[in-house]
Image (cartoon, rainbow, N blue to C red; front, side, top):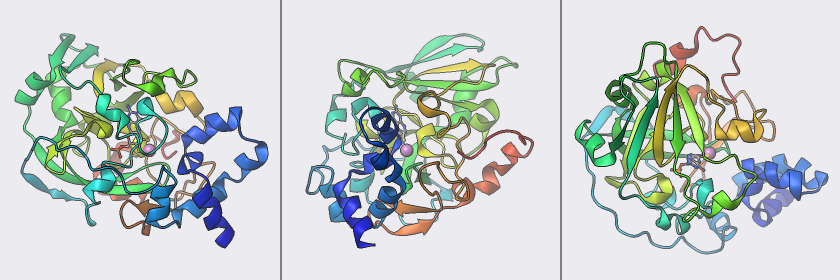
Length: 330
Ligand SMILES: Nc1nc2c(c(=O)[nH]1)N[C@H]1C(S)=C(S)[C@@H](COP(=O)(O)O)O[C@H]1N2
Ligand SMILES: [Mo]
């Protein structure tokens, strides 16, 4: 027990993350790589101060104020557990374009969010580019509290402000034979140091089926905690797919393509044996390098059981009832 904790303190959590894979191939001895499961488990038991101290020490820097963006809360989506502290949700991030540590919030300030437009391409009635402000005029914003479960076994509960992804599908007017949406996110080498890590298959892309996109849970977020999204959380617009592992929720979207071909997403390209297309949350299907049975809540660091479909089965399980030969959960 003591040994596990000590190892957790000494070795950054990113070694228990997808990044470890790349480092593992290039730098880590086989022995260190074999210990990763232990490291992940040890870190999960580490107190908050130690979690911070391994990312450079001390509390996170205060965040710059953000513009208010309030919308009526939809009581149907109440998150089912206490909100994560805003400070944690906005200073403990995965945004690999800005680096592989969890404290990219400072670097992400450089994200060029204005002007922003989103290209709607592929199998749609009229391919075009929509300015972010014009898109905002065509949708009705609401607030939803969703649980978020990262594949690395941490989780948060966040009040997002946004609109259903189905609204974007409606606006895009896809052709009847389009089967997938493919999201491409900003890749700007001038402001994003992570893009110079050439072993990553940039740009970050993700995809869902049209049926998933039209599911009522699928959401595009433009704000959180009653304010516009901060850059590190994917400003100005990001996916929020609460029944799937967090990596599916692509940040800072610049293009949505409609296609009849299943995309090969960023993490699949990096390691498809660990990160699949469907990536639905399931505590009974371990990641090849760690268990998915429990998750650590940002803020309290409490360990709680993970739920299948992240607890959203009543909304989404039916989407998958006829997909018998697919790897739905990892
Ligand atoms: N463009 C982009 N989107 C991304 C990522 C990323 O590195 N780049 N990381 C993903 C992962 S692994 C998670 S868990 C969530 C984290 O979102 P958060 O920082 O708002 O918690 O963003 C997802 N979207
Ligand atoms: Mo993640």
